[in-house]
Amino acid sequence: MYICVCNAVTERQVRSCVDAGATSLDDLEFELGVASCCGSCAATAAEYLPGGRCSSVCHVQSVAVPSRGRLPGAAVALADQGGHAANSFPIPVIAAA
Image (cartoon, rainbow, N blue to C red; front, side, top):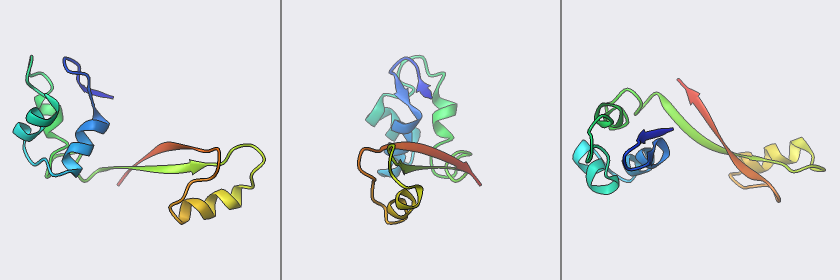
């Protein structure tokens, strides 16, 4: 989802910036250009900052999906170990607490 349409900044980019240490809207503006043009995205971007509505509610996790011919149990074992199955691609899974 796009947070800032003017600068084509996505939710994933905002989360990554916050995970890297951004703690204020000024930090997001400096790193990504959020709220530097029309400013209509400022409130939404601020929700992803520490203490914001989306900071502790949403969690994104990548999961390996096996290609055809692989056993489902093998993929689960690889995912549990943090690895990826051969010929697989990550699918973001969003869970709300």
